[in-house]
Image 1: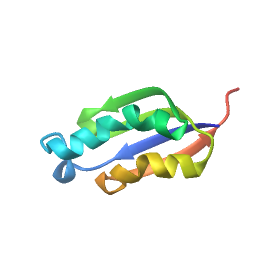
Image 2 (image 1 turned 60 degrees about the vertical axis):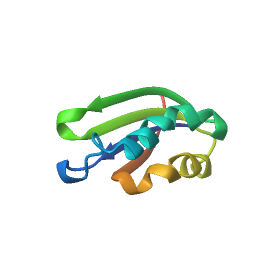
Image 3 (image 1 turned 60 degrees about the horizontal axis):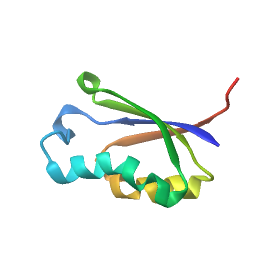
Length: 84
């Protein structure tokens, strides 16, 4: 299944100067294969503190496992989509 994942946070919780949090966020792509997930694309709007991931995952359980390390770093919207 294909999912669009939108991550947002605000200026006060931005992790750009938090090395541990930043490493966890950028580790998503490195850890994806461990959960049978393919990150097809990642887009960021730094000025709006928003990131978008396009992923292919076998289940919500796999997504939950992959994103467990970063759930507290902001708000996550996970939307299943189909290609038309």
